[in-house]
Length: 557
Ligand code: FAD
Ligand code: NAP
Image 1: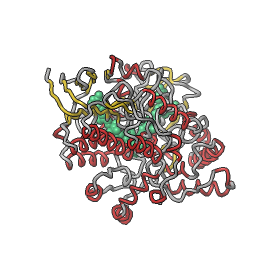
Image 2: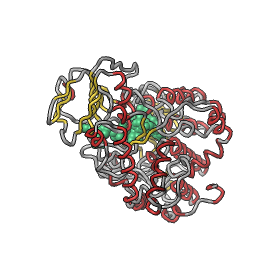
Image 3: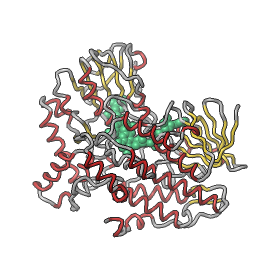
C-alpha cells in the first residue's frame, strides 16, 4: 500500500474543495485533494439532469475571492445552466492550477485520528494511505442521492435515472413514456424539459411544493457591467443579506400582517413578477409569522389555480400541508404550465401511494402506469449522508457515525468535539443550505485557513471543539430555529426524507450576517470554545447577544 505524507488532505473537489486547496496552498501547505468524480465541480459535475441550473442569480453564485476572476468570467443567463456552472468550476481549477494536487476517481473510505502523533490517516478506494496533520471534509451537503426503497425497483425492465447521478452522455426521451417520481427542485426543473421531449410523462407527487417563477433571461450587458463595476460593494451587501444574497426589489421592512390585504398582495405580486426566491423575502417575518406565511401560501395557490386549467390537477398541485419555506422553496420555468399539456399526467401519491415498481412501470394502490424509463428525482441524504459513508474515527476510537447517531452535532458547523484538526466545510449547524452556498463556502474556507495559519504561527499542533461549547452551540441553534417555520416541514432540512434518520433541524437559521459575527467573535476571543494543544478553551461569547448586535452602520449601508 502506497503511503504519503502531506500537510492537509481535502476530500471533495466541488467549489468548497477547490477554494480550500487554493487557500491552503497560499499558506505554503502541501495539500492532497481526493475526488470521487472524474472531474471538478461537485454538484454541477453530478447533477446533469435536463433543466438543471442555479436558483441563486449567477452573478452572485460565484467566487468573490479573486477580482480578476470576477471580471474575466461572463455568465450568459440570469440563472446559469449546469453546463455553464461546470465550465466555471473547470475554469477556476485551470486558472489557479489546482488539478495537479487532485486525485480524481478516488473515493476516501476512512479517516482515522492518531492520538499518539496528532495526525489523520486517510485511506482511499485505490488502496492509498495518506497521513496529514489536517483533514478537511469538503464533501458537500447534497452529494449522496436518496434511492427510494420502493419494492421491485431493481426489477424494472427499462433504464432508471437518478437526477443526482445523471449520465454524462445525456438521455434522449423522444417517443418514450417516462415516469418521474418526486416533485422537489430537481423534478421541477426537469419535468418541463422532459415533457417537451417524451411521448408521455407521468409525474408522481407525494408533497406539492411552493414554486415561484424564475423569470430566467439572457444576461443583459448593462446588468453585467453594473455588477462588474460595483462588485466590491455588491459583495459587501450580499454578506449583509440574511441568506447571503442581495435583496430582491425593495422588501417592505414591516411585519406582513401589519399592512392591509391590498398592500400585502401588491408586495407578493411584485415579488412574483421579479421572479426568484426573493418572493419569500417580501416581508421580513414570513418565516416566523405563521399567519403571514399563510397569506403567501394562499397567494401561490391562487397563481397555481390561475395557471393550471384542470381544476382537479390544480388542487393537487396546491401545497396545503406545510408553511412556505419550511421545505426548500423552488423556482421554475413553466412547471405548472406543463400540466396543461396533453401528454402529462399528475398522480397524487397521498390518494394512491406507490405499492411497487413492476418490470413495466409504476404500480400504485389504484392502477399500473407502464413506462419505458423511470426518473428518480427523490433527492439526497442531505448534510450527513456523505460523511456517514466514510469511516471517520476520532479520539478514543469514537466514530463520527456514533457521535451523530441522534443527529449531527458540530461546533459552529466547523468542527466536531473529539475529532481534532478535522474541519467541515458548510457542516451541520452552519447556515450552509439556508444560504447562497458560495458565500458560505468562502466564509468557512477562509475561517479554516485562518485557523490553520494561526495554529502554525503559534507553533500549535492540535485544535478541537470543546464538548461544552458544542453543546451550547446546539442549544443556541435550536433556540434560534424554534420560532421559525423551518421545523414544521417534513423536509430534508430535518432528515424527514430518509427513513430511520433522526429528526433534527440540521442547518443554522440565524442568518449569514449573524453567523459571521459569531464566528468573528469566536476568532477574536482566541478561538473561544476550541481547545488548542489541550489547553482549556477560552470562554464563549454570548451567541444570542452577538447575533442580535446591530450591523455596523457602515456595513449595512
Ligand atoms: P459538492 O459540490 O457537493 O462537492 C462535494 C464533492 O465531494 C463531490 O464532488 C463528491 O464527489 C466529493 N466527495 C464526497 N464524498 C467523497 C469521498 N468520500 N471521497 C472523495 N470525494 C468525495 N446552492 C446554491 O447556493 N444555489 C443554487 O442555485 C444551488 N443549486 C443546486 C442545485 C442542485 C441540483 C443541487 C443538488 C444543489 C444545489 N445547490 C445550490 C447546493 C450546492 O450543493 C452548493 O451550492 C455547492 O455546489 C456545494 O459545493 P461543495 O463543494 O460544498 O459540495
Ligand atoms: P428534494 O427536494 O428532497 O425532493 C425530492 C422529491 O422526491 C420530493 O418531492 C419527495 O417527496 C420525493 N420523494 C422522495 N422519496 C420518495 C418516495 N419514496 N416516493 C415518492 N416520492 C418521493 O430533492 P431535490 O429536488 O433533488 O432537491 C434537493 C435540494 O437540492 C433542493 O432543496 C435545493 O436545495 C437543491 N437543488 C436546487 C436546485 C436549484 O433550483 N438550483 C435544483 C435542484 C436541487 P416529499 O417532499 O414528500 O418527501
